[in-house]
Length: 128
Image 1 (cartoon, one colour):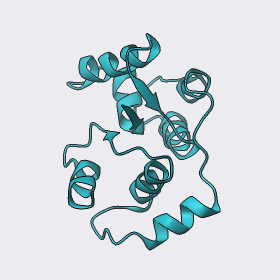
Image 2 (cartoon, one colour; image 1 turned 90 degrees about the vertical axis):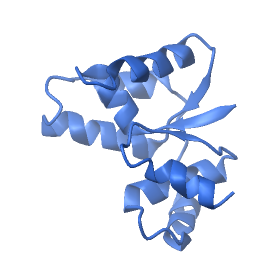
Image 3 (cartoon, one colour; image 1 turned 90 degrees about the horizontal axis):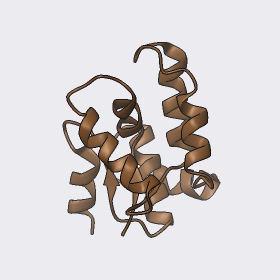
């Protein structure tokens, strides 16, 4: 099963948090070839934004490391943006809509996220 990895999984794996162990376990499974996790260019942008903002502490180079580890990245192109704009998901923000559209365009039906509200998982459950 292929799944999309949300940016927060990558960030939580890199910093002390209550989610760190679970997030590291996911990334290690992908690195070891036991799981097939994918990352998009939009997810790299989110990780990079957090890195540059300093909000998560010293995670210098995390975006670059993630980009190299998950190459080739899933692209976000005009087709995916159009699909994201067409989603009827009022509870989802713009980035989450882009992630859902990216997953749908790549026949991925699972997004792994440390989002406390599980908004993405809830959207997929409601829209099989």
